[in-house]
Image 1 (cartoon, rainbow, N blue to C red):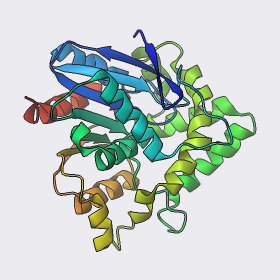
Image 2: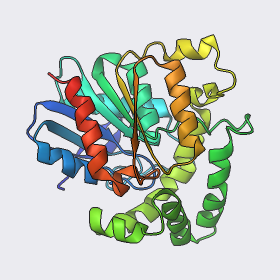
Image 3: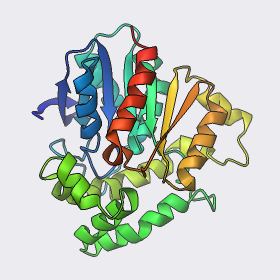
Image 4: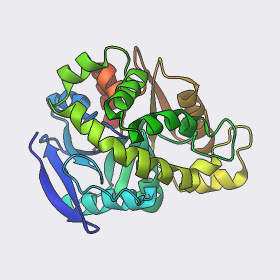
Length: 292
């Protein structure tokens, strides 16, 4: 893919627009692997239904990297996406938004802050529960990353990323990445992990939504926070992902009214890499229902 750059909120962001379709779809990647959405971009491009907008968030690939001692809030990243949409799309009725992992959190925040911009939300294992350090079960995600962060900070950067990829893709991660992603994808992930470990995890810990994600006590206030989200939502998880992804599905289904569920077979957290064909079929079916 060939990328252009633009300045948004005093930050250089790298992006590409592919496809000649009339249906706009903005893709927000998750942490560490900035190009994980490329396999589904390739699948959706073939259908000729969509105009696909793929960009690298702050701290990834050729976009401006964030100083180590800074974090960028989920709201700020949602505003980055909003400014990009406003600059490159004049869309009546909004754009379809796809977000993976942390990108899913950003997509939800975008829908809350700028509902007119969002037509639908496709959330691939969105980062919701698991970042509340005051909740024993809720802190599980942060705790699971602690050893990776320690490993990365101690200088074992490659080992930390290999461990992450084995957990989220599987033991065959190397062949999958080599087959589906650009040649430098692994090296870029090693470099960009700094952003995820030191800027994005702290941002998720302070994101107000993560404090509302106690499944045993979903209050009226919590439901009111999500009440502004009226757009149809497709929640997608891998069949082989653990209970955290199921918790997130249950939570979102309880606080938002229009949620469809799709389970992608033979997939874990990086489902775009493990089964892009089935995922793209589910996405196409969902998006077509809400396109002009």
